[in-house]
Image 1 (spheres, rainbow, N blue to C red):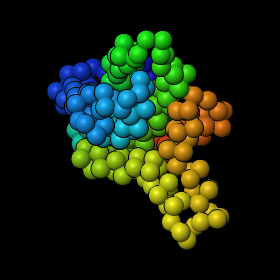
Image 2: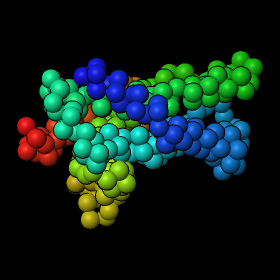
Image 3: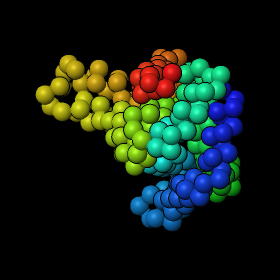
Image 4: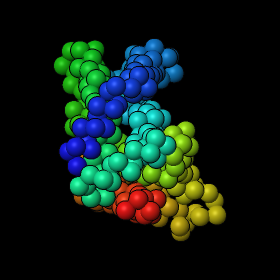
Length: 246
């Protein structure tokens, strides 16, 4: 697994597209949080990062498919998947190696956003302390959300040899799980019955729960279950697509 992990990190760092994706993510965060009036923290009148944690999932919705789209698609396109399977690696080693490499890169992109917490602390009025518990909980929720989006992105990449198709499939699946079930739960036909359970299926419900500063084990189990599900599906797809190679 470590060999695959190092290979993926090296491939990403040698690609201009990777730096562009992270750069666009950070620039978009900066513009929406400090420049654009409708979402600017400076116009919010309160020393908090609520705006950032409302917008961050949507930024990740675009960043993570861009990071993961080449993980398997590029291997199938270039034919290096055959070389990969000549190595003494199990399917699970390949899947986890690629998954953790993509996740580390996404977390690396999130790391500079910690400066926002320092900034609001400096901007807060005297004897006014930001709600650090809520901020810490929101970052934990954001990490779980990023880990889940990454698992979905790696799965989408395993379905195709075309990176653009992998990006679009990952984008659709991430949106469906994050906002789709929540939107369905608000359909009048489901009111008073299935709406509650549809909401529970959505990532946004559990992300919002953790963002309140309370890390509930039920929300953690939900995120871990979705991550394991998509990694297992990736392994199944990989086994079927490489059946003739073995």
